[in-house]
Length: 322
Image (tube, rainbow, N blue to C red):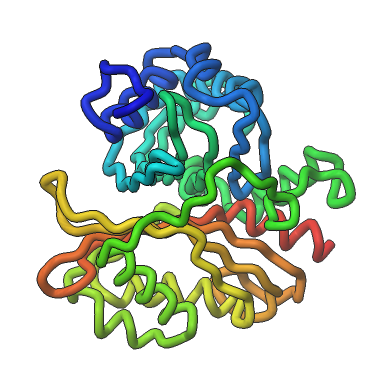
C-alpha cells in the first residue's frame, strides 16, 4: 500500500492491527501518528475534532473497562486514487465494568456489543471517521434502560438547557474525505434494499431476505428469520415516518474468503411523530446516524448488522420534549 508501513500486508490488516495496538496493547500514544491532528470524529453522541480528544476518550474507556477486547468481525473497504482507503470496520467488543467512570460506580457486570467504524486513511494515518457504538446494548447488559440512562446523562450535565448536544448534520464539518464508496453490485443491491424499506415498502424483507436470515440489531438484539428483521426496520421507521432518509456511503465486496457483502452509512432526519421503537410521539426533530453491514447468499440477504445509538436518540428526544 503506497504511503503505508510495510508491516501491514493489506488494508484490513492495517485497520485490525492498529485497533489492537491502540486499545489492547495500550499504545494510546500511537494515536498521535495514526490519527491526524485535526481529524473529525463523528458519533451519535457528538462531534470531536483532533486526535487529542480521541486520546482522552480512549484513556477514560480503558480505565473504566481495563479488560476490554475489540474483536474484528469484518473490514469492508474501498479504494480510490483520490481518497486512498475507506474501511467500514465491524467489531464485537467485550468488557467488564470494574472501575468507576461514565457508567457510574463499578458494577462488575460484563457486556458484549458491536461497533461499526468508518475510517478514511492515507499515508499510514486516519484522517476522517464516523462511528456508531451500540450504547443501547451496553446499558441493557449493565441493568439499565436506554431511556433512563439518557435521562441521567442530561441531569448529570445540568439539565436540558446545558446538556451536551447530540450530533446533527448542522454541526458537521467538511472533512477531507469526500468519497462515496464504490459501485460494486453488492453495495448497489443492499443500498436499493434499504431504500425500499425506508420508502415503507416492507415487503422487501419477504422478497429479498433469506428465510433463515440472522439479524444483529441495535440494543444487542439478535433475530432469527425475517420477522425480527421486519420488526427492527418497522419500529425505527414508524417512530420517524416522514423523516428524510439519505445514504451517505456504500461499499460492496466479493472476496477475502467471505460471502458477498456490503456496508452502508445512512441517516434519518425528521420529527419524532409516530409510535414505534421510541414510544409516544413528541414531535421533536431527531437525527439518526446509522450504519449497516450485510452478507448475501444464494437465497438472499443471509446476515444483517444494523446499528444506531438508542441512548443518543433518547437524549435528543428528552432534551427537547422537556
